[in-house]
Each structure stands twice: as structure tokens, then as C-alpha cells.
Amino acid sequence: MASPKAGYFRALLFCLPAHEDLDVPPPLVYSLPPDKLQRAIEYAHAGYWLHFSSEVYAIAILAAIVASGLSATFRNWAAAASQRRFIQALIFVPLLLLTNDILYLPANIYGQHLERSSINPSKAGPPGCGTGPRAS
Image 1: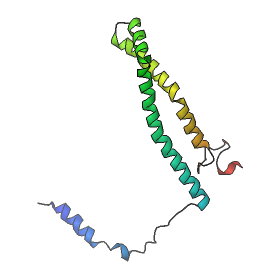
Image 2 (image 1 turned 180 degrees about the vertical axis):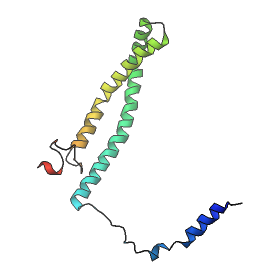
Image 3 (image 1 turned 45 degrees about the horizontal axis):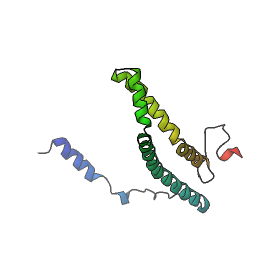
Image 4 (image 1 turned 120 degrees about the vertical axis):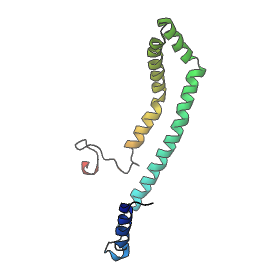
């Protein structure tokens, strides 16, 4: 059974005027000029390509670290340094992450290049940095 408040709100809802009765202007539609629209589409496609290819690249990096035996070397170094698992993790994890980040650097550099490239439709940066529409 519905509460009395629910009935009150339902009655209030149905007493409101319909949307057509309100003088609401239609929503404004914004679209980019054709040249900027083309640049925005190219930028989006490059971003999609970078996103999906960098995922494959990241998996390939981890597979290469394991296949090359580098992770086993890091494990052996950690095991030689201490018998405690926590200390071994403190040695192994930073080595693995540093190696992964160094090998992933080309994808990060290309991502930054894409953000700063001429196809990026919104090159606006922080004020006073010489980027954005007022820089010229």
C-alpha cells in the first residue's frame, strides 16, 4: 500500500502543466566549423588508435619482461637481499615498475606529441603559458 506522501507527490506531478504548455525555447545546437570538425575527428581517431595499441604494447612489454628472464633476475636479487617476503617485494616491485615505465616511454611520448600536435582542436593550456587562442 502506498503511503499518503506518495499519493500527494503523484497528484502534484500530474497537476503540473505539460512541457508543450511552457514557453521553453528549443535547445541550441552547437557544431564546430568544418575545418575544426575535421581536425577534431582526426584527433579522436588518433586517440582511439593510441589507446588500443598502447594496451597491446603494454601487454607485450610485460610478456617480454617475463620471457627475457628479467623478472626472474629481479626475483633472484630480491631473494638474495632478504629472506623476508615483504622486503623482497620492496625490492622486486620498484625494479619491475621502473623497467616497465622505461619500456613504455615511447607510447607516453607519442601520447604527449598527439596532445600538443596541430590536429588537437583544443590546444589551450594554463593561462600565461603561451598556448591557446590568445597566444598569437
